[in-house]
Length: 192
Image (cartoon, rainbow, N blue to C red; front, side):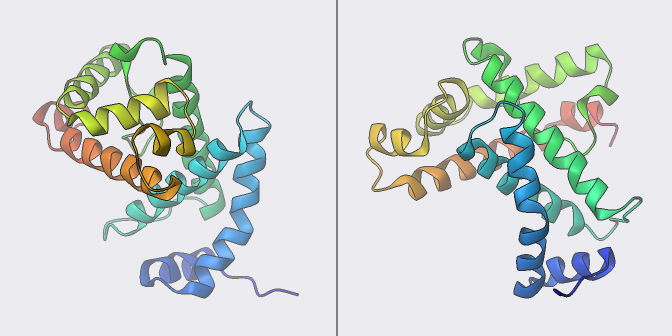
């Protein structure tokens, strides 16, 4: 029987980058996320991306020194990946309406905001999106709005392979999130 770890041991292991804990976490949760996305009209690539984005989000959250786990890690991660998938669906459904571009930026579900705050957040995201360089806009547009695969993006952008396209998408999205979070309006919207 495989060893089991407490939530605290998993969090400490992820914080310190222990390979054993990372493998344990992947074995425990990756298949659940993939099944969830596939059973909710997603494809395998989207499921992989949702897992990766959700894992990165969890890691960023637990690395904050003020982080305190208020519920089980499983329930916490479940909330993260379900919200991440909701945003993927939302982005896919709006692919013809690029003026409403949005991305997972918040630690709590978006429904905790009133409609005015949601609208202001969408405007802020779109303003920062338009300030990205042309390559980043093109890659994000192809991925989120035109639903292109990483292979298609790599081909169209003349990248050597799919991994370079994936890295570019992640870097562009991370940069976009950072720019949004640094805006005064964003800090007011999330009541920082």
